[in-house]
Image (cartoon, rainbow, N blue to C red):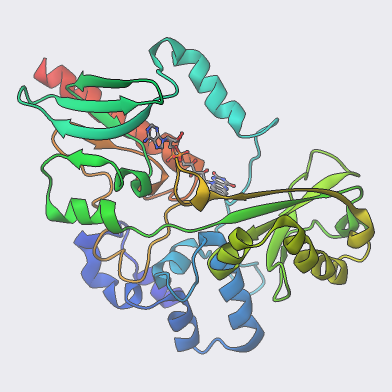
Amino acid sequence: MVTDIKSLPEKISHKTADSFRLLDNQSITEYISGIGITGWLFNFLNVVLTREYGMEASEQSAVNFLIMFDVPSDSNADYELFGSDHEVFKIKGGSQHLADALYEQVKEQVVLNHKLVAVEENKTRDYNLTLENNRSVKILQAPYVLLTLPFTILRKIRFQVGMPAEKRRCIEEIGYGNSCKFVIGLDTKPWRKAGKQGYTFTDISFGCGWDSSQRQSDEKGSFTVFGGGHSGDNMLKKSKDELIKDFIPGLETIYPGSEKAYNGKQVKFCWVQNPFSGAAYSSFRKGQWSTLAGWEAVPVGNIYFAGEHVSRDFQGYMNGGAQTAREAAGLIAEKITKEG
Ligand SMILES: Cc1cc2nc3c(=O)[nH]c(=O)nc-3n(C[C@H](O)[C@H](O)[C@H](O)COP(=O)(O)OP(=O)(O)OC[C@H]3O[C@@H](n4cnc5c(N)ncnc54)[C@H](O)[C@@H]3O)c2cc1C
């Protein structure tokens, strides 16, 4: 693994594909079994990576695993499955505060409750953006456009603008996960009584979950079960009562007292059902790093793209949305200055 990780180029994209195509053409499960990982370690990695990317590890590119795994610096050091800077921060009061704070600064320019349904070139070489809601349709003309919609949504709207076939293919095809969360209310935190922090991966029932009230309360709290791949489909299909029946016994086995602590409250959210995301976050399928990666951010005329799915450094994270939008805004400002 160390050799393979070190063999990856600094910039992983279709342009550097020759150096990693062999790895990209393997799924994570093909790769890990190919290097001799079997038994519990195979099962563990399979559960962890399926849940993390929201797609069966057998469908994902092995590159997803290799770019995230931090190799221990020496044999006494720990390894980091998700890299050393994973989940270091949490936003007090919830992540929505970040979007709310940004909105406060620009609200005069924001048009809410309108859905973008079409982007088309017009004769003056501007773009027509069609925005709709239940009551009206607005057509805005814009010389520059920054599209931050997930590609899952962009591929469903009318996007009639000339572009290279590879760019179109990237928008149409990049993989996305189907993550679901099922949040279980608990009057106590049985994992704390067991001296644990609560972050759990298991091959029984719920598969993966964590204390979603960490640093918010010591007593009452919630445990979030995180589904993805087949387990995400299962969570989507089943009712909340069925999920409680499936998950609580497993939780009880690992953290005795969970059954008694369950307070009857639960929330389920599956991102594939959200009409504004259509999926969780991007997750490259086998073969996509060597063919589609590198096309995500490429502008088309004066249309620019940003979002987690466009980010090389923080794909699947909020940082990715922030970083790529800042970069795209900089490029647009530069172009406006040049074009006068
Ligand atoms: C289950 C789950 C867990 C996650 N955990 C973490 C985590 O712990 N840490 C972390 O950093 N990140 C996490 N993320 C990822 C993070 O939420 C995303 O990376 C981030 O939200 C991506 O930002 P974005 O701006 O690219 O896209 P989005 O946040 O999806 O923003 C796109 C926006 O476009 C809008 N939109 C969509 N369609 C239209 C349309 N037709 N017209 C107008 N507007 C439209 C949407 O309403 C939305 O507001 C998680 C994501 C999920 C799903």
